[in-house]
View 1 (cartoon, rainbow, N blue to C red):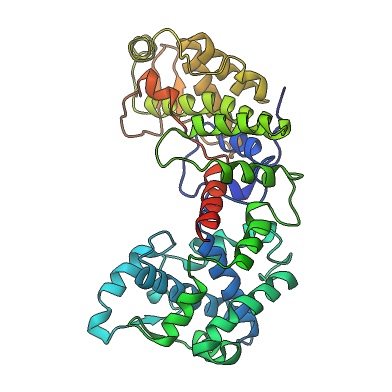
View 2 (spheres, one colour; view 1 turned 60 degrees about the vertical axis):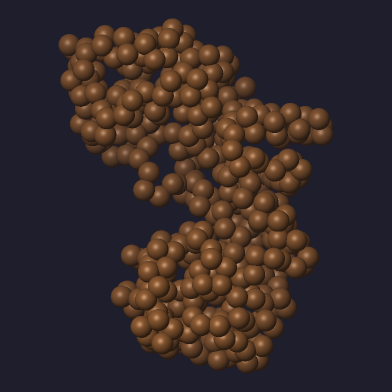
Length: 422
């Protein structure tokens, strides 16, 4: 049964990653039929709260244009980060390193930190692109929380939720409709007191990890189940139910967990979910070893292919038992099918050649760049993009290796946060 690739999903990209084999469109296409709205970085439930509240505050505040509203949002994002760090000892948000360092030195400034959209005070090198606006806006829109178009605006349903749930918490210390806060956010610079006080407590109440029943229901519908625009036809909601019923152990391979979820799905009669989970397991049994081997080859410049084959035989034996024998059937790209076949058969020579060919294809598709790896006529490796030398994982380590996310960790973490917040 073949899975056909679609146009590359920009929300799938792992920032800063190198993908010399073009694996991203493969695993993204496998994950999207099950998880339609999340990305690899949208693992933080409180970040969605911060986004929604911040956009609402800037919309109802005194900012006169989009540039001022964007600047005000950056200040709110900073304030929320400091509160999460100081009040909840949270480390799972963007900009935490700068926030921790500045909070530690706030004592010399009377317990206050300076908030501003000025680059000198931002909590990331480029807070607009690397923070919530750059990473959470598209997933929030896919979840039915933001309206189409730019700049980002809450949907009527999301705005009503923020108005009813979070503005009253802020109003307790910041005035009706948080007017004092919206004015503070539009200042060129604002001194925020990190010591215990009513204004800090009001912001902390918005970001409290213990959610009300109304909050849990809202986030479950929009984030965990995919929202009103859910393109998975209910598969994401059913997968989320399975995850909630079988929380992932803190240790243990992800592959085993996904296989267990597939079994659970089939027991529930959800064959469409179980089948797609099994496809993911089959796909990863190829992508993971291919990726680590390619990285290994990038550290073997000028090595003879026969020498590399000897090394592969010494570490992986005649073949990898962990590669699913039918994995090629779920891969639509010919070169990836060839990689799968070579792995199944233990044809290490062919595998090295196909990996080099795959990399050459990816480089051509990206604009004609030279391949990172090629095999010369003399059967030696020529490496143009050198990686740090790495050893090959043992065959039993490959069995438990899971390299790509398929958006599963994001859903798993959001489900856990929502379930544990009660």
